[in-house]
Image 1 (cartoon, rainbow, N blue to C red):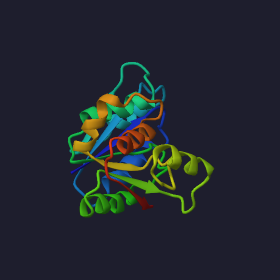
Image 2: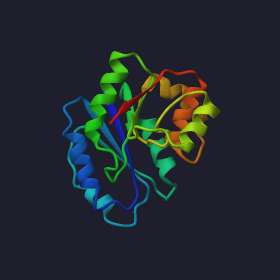
Image 3: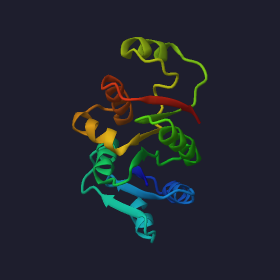
Image 4: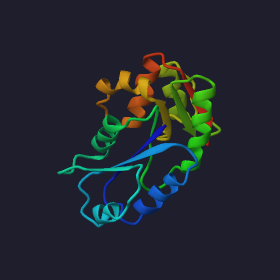
Length: 180
């Protein structure tokens, strides 16, 4: 099963579309939406859903996107986990490619790559971390739950997806980059 975590803050114009898009994927999944104390109609829209595979968690105060993502990670029960942007920056259809790569090739983390060339930042990070990746800034990452649990206590950075990627590399986890 795939756990899809969607941290949200003031996404009344996008949240319904992202939940429906994720829910339409032909895979077993749970959708965990963490509302970070939105001031708009996001909470009202979330309460209108009646999906068996949807968990909605509301923060009592605004704590930030990374805290919302971490709350979702701590409540995920799937064998595989992904954090979905609430504005559909990454198309959930890409999950299937990531899931196939991670399952069939026995990797810990599949990084969804939008880039075909490595820029200066990618070159610098590749040198720094000893790992050649084209899209270091990708927030589209699918990770095995067992691998994430090894990283969770150490995730304290300002960018949780970058933190997951760099901690996984430092711990010598198997990372694959998949074009999406």
